Image 1: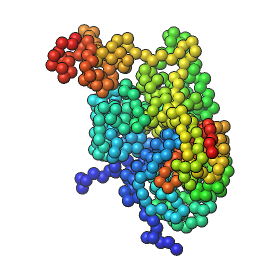
Image 2 (image 1 turned 90 degrees about the vertical axis):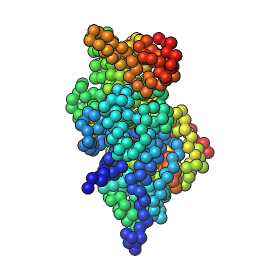
Image 3 (image 1 turned 180 degrees about the horizontal axis):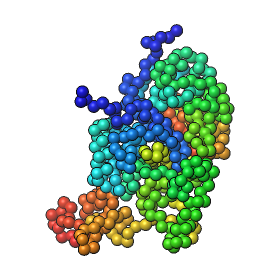
Length: 202
Length: 296
């Protein structure tokens, strides 16, 4: 039983650390495929990467329902830490979540189970925060779309292996869709709903 | 009890989180207007409350801020917003476009090409390009959902029928990433081509109307037009009277009560930079830092 006093700490400087983390995420979202570093450090519960914890402290609050995958929600440390530091409600219904935290990508549910937004309000969608093994080695993916000058190449080791195949629903759904933030330790890469894979290497 | 009682960059952290989430959605859906819970700011609506909230949500201690109003760094609105952030966030400020990391603008895009490490924040009075054609929000929202933009083309066509050309000179509608029709804010249409494939991130904030929207870098932005009436940026057919620039947007300045006038660059930083580099127009005073004074 972890008491509040034993929970890992949040940011040392809430204001400037949140600002710095946000700029990394904003730059990542504006330039899909590019790897951004999250500089500020905070404590993080065991199943949560540093980057995920920083994003949680920066973007989550009582207005953002969260959905946690099985590995995250099994950990009382994660739920207690999120509740204490962000106050965000954890929901069982993934279709009403603002954010979904995925620690075990291989068990990622079908994307249709998350909020995809509506035609009138495509912004009312779930943003996936997906923890991956690596964002500097692994398969290479050539990406194109808004924010990319020509083609951007991402080298990443991602589970589920078919993530980009699944994200092709964004092509038909647009402007509805799912935005994904990939996190490996302190590195983040964003794949907004406008990004397309033009070529996959090995 | 006179200690400053506001947070870094004025806004409280909960408000910044809300605005930051809206900015991320806006970048993910280029040209779509994301509703946000706009706050009251210590300045009246119409003075850039939307742009100020976006700037406050992104600004950090390492940023260098430039603020322009109609291209000028020296007007009341620009100076007061620049001082606001110098005081509440302690950030460095500049008038040089090239040195800035965040540029907040009212109704102009700088003449100097923007680069990838910059964010351009627009102050937007009325974000909905269809608002003057259809006053009901429920209807304009549906028109955006269906990408039903025929009404806008009818409006441009009526311009041609009445005036022989598309008479819209500012807030000229654009289509972003081949999907959403967007109001570029009341910038002169001269600036529209600069939005296309721009290396910098462009963010738009409308405080009174409570909307944030964005154009990611390197995104296609097309000014609406017709094949037989293609879009043409408008410009006075004269060089700047101070720096002789022939490719900048000009302001008309009345110089006396006898009809005297001069045309000068609206972008003061660009104009001063050119004068410092030795370019002189027909009405420039003693050559800038040049004692020889032989130029006309």
